[in-house]
Length: 490
Image 1 (cartoon, one colour):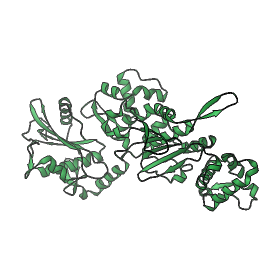
Image 2 (cartoon, helix red, strand yellow):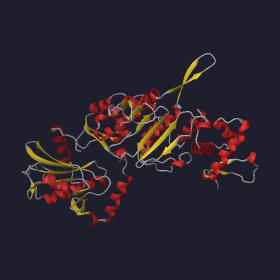
Image 3 (cartoon, rainbow, N blue to C red):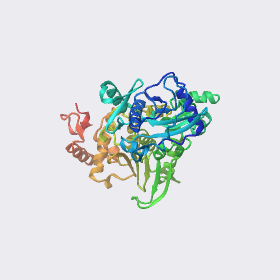
Image 4 (cartoon, rainbow, N blue to C red):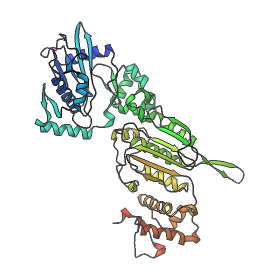
C-alpha cells in the first residue's frame, strides 16, 4: 500500500518530477483529464515501465503542460470521476490484473491545482488493464504484445528482481533514516570505524544500498537496509510479519505455550540477542562431576547459530504473512522458514550453497553472521556428533523448510530409522571433510564399545541395503571396508 503522504512530500515530488527535462517512460504529464479508459491504460503502462526501468513507482501529473512542464492547473477531480455509475478508483481496481497499488493525490503547488497519480511497479508479472498489458515507448503508451523485445526484457526483470531492492520506507529525511536504522551496528559488525558525521554515515549506507535517494528528496530505505538494521521492524509495515517468532512450549506438543516473543530488531543488529534468547530458553542437562555438578547446553551453540542464520537468509520473502519461527520443546528444537529448500534435503552437506537472497547472504557473510562457502550444515552435523545427539533432520513441509535438533538419546533407545539417518549423515560429514567412514568411526559416533563392532556392522549393512551408503571398495575385507554416501560413488 502507498503510505500516507504529507503535503510537503507531494509538493516536493511534483516540483522534482516537473523539473525533468522531458517525459520519461515512467512519468506522464497531462493538462486535463480525458476519460477513465486512458487512465486505466496509464496505470498498466506505468506499472510495467517502472519495473522495467528499476523505479519503485510511475507517475501521471494532470495540470502540467507537456511541452514546457509549466504548472497550469487542472479541473480534474478524481473523487468525482466516474465510469458509468461507478467511481473511477474501484472501477480501475476491478479491471487491473494483477492488483497493483495506485493512488490519486490533489496538491496545490505555487497556486496551481495538480492531480498526481502514483502507481506501484509491477512485481511478478505484467499488469494488464481489461486483459491487455500496456507499456510506455518513449512518451507514448502502447500494447506490450506489439513490442516483443520489451516483453522479453520485462519478464527477465521479474525473474531477476531481488527482494533486497524493494522499498521498505519512502521519503525519509537523513535524520529520520538514522532514527529508523541501527547504523552503529552496521559499523560494529563490519569492524570498521564509524563514519564521521551524518552526511558520511548516510553516504556509507547508500553505498551499501541500504538506502537510496528519493525522487522527491530525502531517502528511501530498501528492504535490505530495513530487514537487517531496523531498530523496530514494526516501523516498516511490509516487513512486520518477517520478524522472528520465538516460542517455548511445555512438553513435546504445541498445546501449552509457556512463553512467546517476537523479534523487534533487524536480523543483523538483533542476531546475537536472538541467539542468546534461544540458548536461554533451551533446557540444559545437569552433569555430575567428581566433586561438583555443572550444566551443559542441550543443543550445541554452534548448531543453533548456523541454523538460525540459515533460516533468516534462505527464506522466501515473497511468501507473505509468514516469517522465520523458532520453537523450543522439552527435548527438541525446530527452526523453520517460509520457502521450500532449493536443493534436496539429503544433499545439504555437499551441495554448493544456493540462496534466493544473494545480496542479503553476501552482506550477512561480511558481517560475520553467516558464511557462503556451504559449510554451515557441516558445522551443524559435526557439533551434533560431538554432543552425541541424534542426527539433525531437515524437512520440507509444503511451502516451508524446517530443521530439527534432538536432545541426547543413547544408541540403544534409537529406533531403526534414527540409526540409519545418523549413519547416513555421518557418512556425508566424513566424506566432505575427506575422512574415511569405517566401522570404527561409526562406533565412535554412536558410543558403541569396540567389543560390539558387530552392532555397528548391522547398522552399516542396513544403510547399504536402504541405498543410503555404499561400500567404497567391495573387494576389501569386512574389517578394511570404507563407506561413502550414495551420491559420492563414482
